[in-house]
Length: 479
Image 1: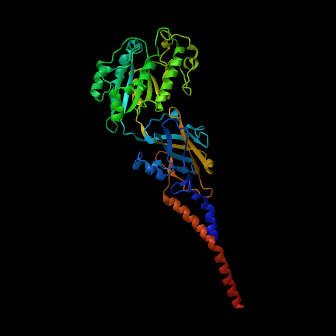
Image 2 (image 1 turned 90 degrees about the horizontal axis):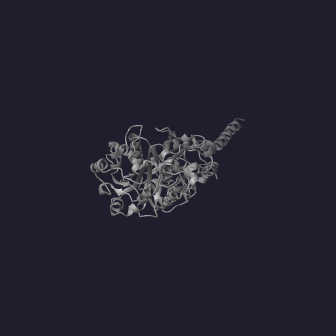
Image 3 (image 1 turned 120 degrees about the vertical axis):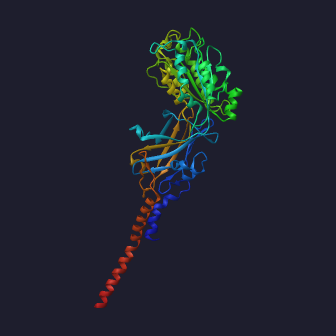
């Protein structure tokens, strides 16, 4: 075997393994992703090749360039695309920053610098939304706040009637069409539709209902019961079934209250702990596909007022203790007691996290409007995970893990194997500051330069030998 052939085998020998796919234009190979922790109908798909991106119906031709895996050893940059799969099909989703974790060989590359990890959404879903508004209509909503002299219901009504909020709910140019299910909960009964309208598709009718029908009632705040009904019982209503199963609308629940869950005069804050745990377990079951088919709503919560707990970090899981929920206020009464401190932002945040939504506490109409618009945000078909690490960590094989927490609780890991001898061409700066793949010509320049060196190495010894023999032959002939 020639020196050229031997060197080519050494340099390129590891690139033909069947279980790995080379990234185009480079010597870096990506293995087959492995999904772990599959929970119910959910799975996580990582795109491991250009061919994988081309086969995905959920990714448009214009976006496929960003779907392909990319590794730049010059800058230590890694880029992988992923999407949520439900019952084997791509599913659009919103993704909270605290619901995803990206790991490089089991470690978070963002530990030193949060800017090193970015999650970029792609392709807004063309599926419309059904926004279920669960509005607190209890007696406390008639309270006049001293800061602006307006009742809480007046502030809420103003927010819901803002043009940009109406546009967020019903969609418009460049957005998927939406519909609204406006429900009010008062006392111990189930939430009731405004004006008897379970589903509203006309913005003009929605405006009329909010202006003329949204009124304060009486009784305590049965917040947990309302959310439980919105995530389970409501799905059985014929109007809701038609909206979700026939018109294909994706449900999103937005629950608003101005206080604490409160069911009777003697309730203490600690009494809400087992009630909240029961609600969270039910909500998680529905999110995992154990309710009505097609009805797996995201749940957002909005508090009107100030936070009762200045700081609260939502614990993992659905187990709730009185100490976690109430701190030292567990034995204190709610009615005329802890409710005077503000809105139960702890319970609202916990409900939103298990419901894959977000939680907001706002004091005025403008703040409420921004919260409603955020809850009506677009859902996306797939995402990019980009991160930077020390380039040294990309000199050998490594694993990338993408992990989604509640409510999905799934993860996938993909192995990446750089070639030990040859680097692909370094990436070039992109418009957003992250490097992008260089053109194939850059790879060709590297390859041709290497081939030239190998050819020269292969033929130079023979050339020197022939030159030496010819030179000695001439000298011998002259003697």
